[in-house]
Image 1 (tube, rainbow, N blue to C red):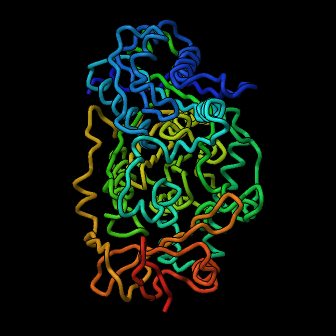
Image 2 (image 1 turned 120 degrees about the vertical axis):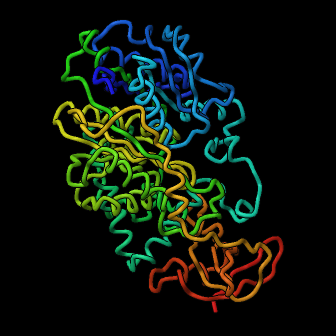
Image 3 (image 1 turned 180 degrees about the vertical axis):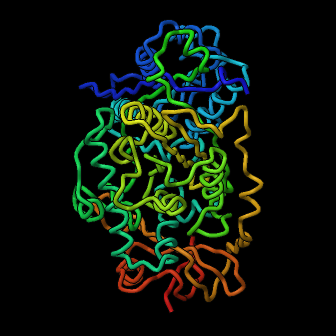
Length: 497
C-alpha cells in the first residue's frame, strides 16, 4: 500500500459534563460535538472537522428521540461534506469497529480525514425523567428499546448485562478450580488497579482509589447487585460523558503540519462474535470469539504479548478482563486499563472504548510503545480488538478485513438444545442471585444441564434462604452439583439433592 495512506490518530478529545442541575446537561449530540472540537484543538490543525469526509458515531440510548446522532453532530460541527454512519447497536465494541473502518477507508485512499465520536448523558436523562414523572428512577439499561423483550431467559430475570455476566463469572471460577475467595481476590486486584489509573486520569468520572478488599466487600455503599458482583464491580452508566478522535492519512497529517509526535499509528484489527442469544453459547467459562479476536489482532500486526506496553481489556464486569488477560498472559499486578475501567473511568454504554482509545493515545504520545485495545459488547457477545502504536507497525496494511467470524464459529463447541419445560434431575452449569437495593436476595436463577445434555433454567425464590446460602456461601462450589428441577407456576424451581 501507499505509505502516505497509513492511518494515524492525530486528535483526541474527552468531555465530562457535571452541571449543578443535572437536568440541564448536554445531550449526546452536544457531548459528541464538544469532544470533536477538543480533538481538533488537540491536533492543532484548523478545519479538520469542516473537511472531514466521514463521521462514525456510536448509537446512544440516553435520549431515545435522537434516532441517528450522525447528521445533527455533523451539522453542529460544520462537517457538511462528511458521510455519516451510526453503529447498529450501542455495543461496547462500536468505537473499535469505527476506528477499524476509518483506518481501512483511509488506507484504501477513499478518504483522508475521518471523525469518530460517541456519548451518553444518562445522568441528565435520569434527572429529566425524575422531574417529569414524580421522581421515578430511570433504569436505562433495562428500559432501552433493544432490551424490551420477553422470552424464556427474561422470565427468569436475565434481562440486562448485569444479570448475565455473573453466569460467566461463576462458570469461570469453577473451571479454573478457584475458591470463591481466590476468584474475588482476582476481581478485587484488577479493579483496585483500575481505580488507581482512574485517580490519575483527569478524564475519569470517579477518581477515588479503592483497595482490592473494598471492591469485593458488600457494604451499604457497595451493595450486592448480582452475585458475586457488588456495585464497585459493575459498569457505572450514570454519567454524562463524550469522547471523539480524528484519524487522517500520514500524507494528510503532514500536509496540515501536524507534528509527527502527535501521530499514533493504527494497526489492523480483528472481530468475531457469539450468538445474540446468550443462552445459545457452547459454554460460559470461555469465549472462542474473544480469543480469536485477540489472537488474530496480534498475528495481523506481528506482535507478541511481550511487545505490548499497555492494554485496555474491556471491563464491564470482572469476568471479561479475567478471560482476556489469560489470552495474552497479562500479569495480575499490571493495570489492564489506560482509562480507568467502566466502574471508575465511567461506563457510557457503548462508548467506553472511545475514552480508552483517547487515553491510550495520550499515554503512547507521552511514553511511546504499542498498545492493544480489546472491546466487548452485548452479553459477552461482540468482540473487536485493534493495535495502535507510537511508531509504524510494519506488518499492518490497509484495507484489510477484520471479519474472523468463520474461524470463531469453527472453534466453538456444540450448542446445547434448550429444554424449557424440563423437570427432573439436573446438574448446575452456572447460576447467579439477584439482590434488592437493600442488599437482600430478590431471586436466583440456575442454568442447569439435564442428564441428556440439554440446557434449562430454574428459579430460586428470594426467601429460600437455605438454597441461596448453599449457592453463595463459598464453602463448596455450587457449579457441578446435582439437584432437581421441580414443576411450578409460573417458574420451575431448583432444589439441591
